[in-house]
Length: 503
Image 1 (cartoon, rainbow, N blue to C red):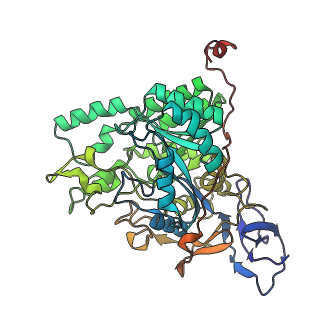
Image 2: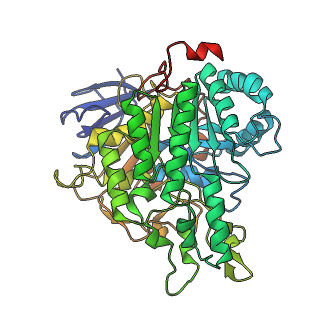
Image 3: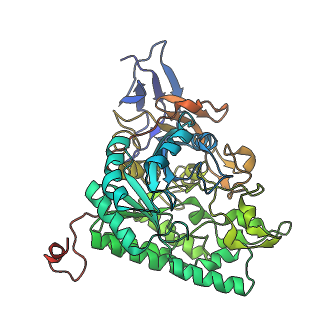
C-alpha cells in the first residue's frame, strides 16, 4: 500500500494498553490503514519520526463554549479551534444554546452553523442547551435533529436564572431523550441555596470576587447531584453530570454506578489543579480574582483535589473536559461587568475560564510518561480514556474518533520524548483570543510536539499552527453509548411492575 503518512519510532497508547515500541502507523486517505512494522514508503509518503515519544489519540473535548451570545468577549470558532489543536485536541463538541424566548431549535441551529462553517481548525459537533423545552421541541424537533443533523446530546441547567429548569422539565427531557437514545448532560447546583446565600452576602456587603466561592458551596452541588441522579433513576435513562468539583457529589455518582445505574461524571482541569485562593485579590489588582470565577467554583481545601484525583484514577469519572467558557478580563462586556460603579459585585461576573489549549498537557503531565511510577496520578491508558476514547463513545463518535486502530480517523498527538517538552504555561504562548490563562506560571512536563488531524499535521511546536481554518469538518454523530451501568433498573424499594401503572 502507498501510504500518505507513516508514524514510526513511537510508543502507541490506546484506551486499554501501551503497545510495544517499534510499531508503526500507516495512514491513507485521512484514516488509519494499519499498525505494523517496516511499513513501505514511497516518494509520496510523509514519514514522521516520533523519536521514542508517546503517541496518543487526538483529544476529544466534549464540553466547549464558543461564540455564544452570553459570552460576547469569549473565543469564536477560529480562535477557539486554533487553541484546541495547539494543545492536542482534534475534536470539540460545543453548545448551540437556546434562549428562553426561542420556540424552535431550527433557528438556533442555523445561527450556530453560520458561525462555525469554514471557521474551525479542528473537527467539531454540537450539543443543544435547552432552556425552553416545549412539547413540540421534545416530540417533533429533537427526533429530526438527531437523525438529520446528528445532534444526539442535550445539556440542562439546574441553576442560573436565565437557564434553569425545574424538576418536571428535567424529567420531560429525560423521558424524551430516553425514547430517542440521546445523551443528557446536566449542570447540577441547587439554585435556591445559592440565591439565598448571595442575598445574604450582598446584604452584608461581602461582594468581592472571592465570595463567589462562598456563594456556591459544596452542599449546593452535593444536593443537586443527588437529585439529578434520582430523576435519572426514575426515568431509567443515562445521564452525565458535567464539571463536578465536590468529592461528596462524585460519591453520589460512584454509589449510583455501584448500583449499575447509567450515571456518568465529568470533571475539568481547574478543579484538579486550582483552589479558591486563586479568587482572592492580588496586591496590585483588587479585582483580579474575577479571572478565576467559574461555576461550580474552585474549592477551598487541597483534600477536595485529592478526592477528585482518586475518582480520576478509579474510573468514576467518564470524561475530562475543558469547559472552555471564557470572558476577557479587560474587555468591556467581559469579567469587568462585575465592577459596578467601581464596586466589586461577584454575582455580576461572567462565569467561566479558558482552558481548551491546556487540558491535554496538564493531565498528560500526571501520567507515568512524565512522573515516577509512584508519583503518577493516572495510567497512560486512563489518560486516553478520559481525554479521547470515552467522550467519543459517549457522544456517538465511536469508530471514527478517540482511538488508534484501523478505520479510525488519523488523529494523533505526538508528545516530546523524555523531558524535552517541559515548559511553563503563560498567556504569551496561548493561541486563544483571551487576555489571560488561569494556569499562568504552572509548569507542565510535556506539550504536544505534533497534532495530526485526519492525517494532516495541524500543529508543529517548532512551526506553530499549520492547519487551515477550513479544514475542520462538522461531525454528524450517532447515538452515544452507556459506559457505566445499564438501563432497565428499578429504583430502590419499587416492585417489578410499578412503572406500567403510570407509563
